[in-house]
Length: 414
RNA sequence: GGAGGGGUGCCGGAGCGGCCAAUCGGAGCAGACUGUAAAUCUGCCGACCUAAGGUCUACGUAGGUUCGAAUCCUACCCUCUCCA
Image 1: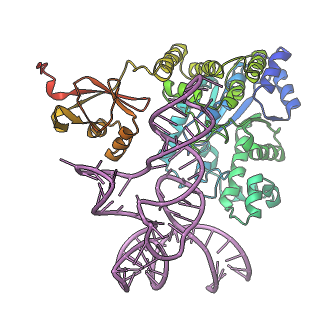
Image 2: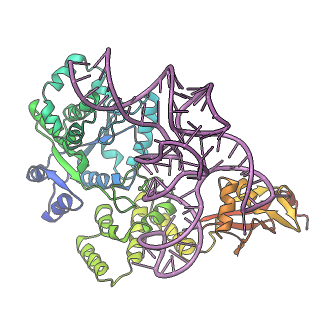
Image 3: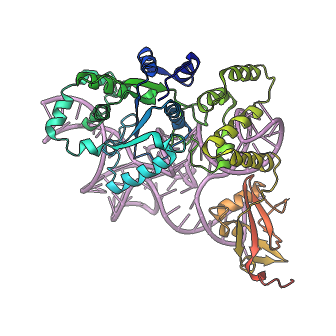
């Protein structure tokens, strides 16, 4: 157990990438006490795909772990049946036990890319909820009032707009709160949108005679659109398990205005450097692209390793920036004679479809018309063109395929 | 139990008998430009057809009325709100 020693590291833990801590003093005290803390983190089996937005909190967990504290990951197999009401009023379909299990597995694979598995305890809600009876539910719910729940922002809004709030949804925060009791959490982590839920856990613990958990809220990461919080349903996310080149590229595509917040929340760039970067960005003394490259590489390194990150960087430089053809291109074997037209020309639009480069022929024709298709660096002006086995077809900037004639497999020279 | 809204393309959301493959916004794709897969601008954005034209699918489901329906009628399914 490493006691927190310097004020400096304490500052870093409690200030950098933190939205709010309730209560900060108490948490600092706990950290100094040398007690091994139980850090609660919920896993939602209905949404098993993690993205960079989740990474913010996970990195924090990791930092706590490095001081010897223990993460308790709760698989929300019961709450998954309700679905977090934070969004619309759509009740999600109940997940089967198998689905929950499969999702939890995927989730954990991603989770442990960042969080230390050795210092994590995994608990399933069903451990305590399977024998939870009606009387338990009543006694749990009698500890809260409707007014109390209506304070919650989205409930409040919906209530005033006359939109429905189901009882099950009301139950959701209660169950989540009880989780804290069940595992005797010392600190619970979440995004700022979870504030209400986490506070409820605190209250419940207290009313049941446990010492209340501290609430650790991290800011919500803005998604690649530069506007809304990163979320899967808004499709503005960068997934943790995406291929390294994609992660790198997507990071490169975030709006410049997001650079500093990404650096702050997703990397360990020292605060002093951060300030410097911020300043040089403001004064245009640095090309934002260079900073983004650094950021992208850092993130890929965390999710994979340094070598992979370098490869991704290299790929970006060559393929995206210099528009070179990548080394590894998927190959497609086709019978050229199937596409033969006349005068040694082939119907490329059909080849694009057969090769899986494009979904439909209409689309292929459109792309050709837009000048987006080229063969061996020669832009197509119509759907017909000559073709030799081994030609590289390029669609748009990033789709490549090498087309090989099945029929000339045997090396017959023409 | 009563009254009243809705169900449209990936999403949001118009249209309410022909001009609708369906306004608009977002997403996506492409082109130009660039400091980048930022920003900006432009175009595309159901499928099929040897194709500035044509055909077929499509507006909850099934029928019907019309020369003609996403638009009207009937039934059904689903969903929401309000009153009790």
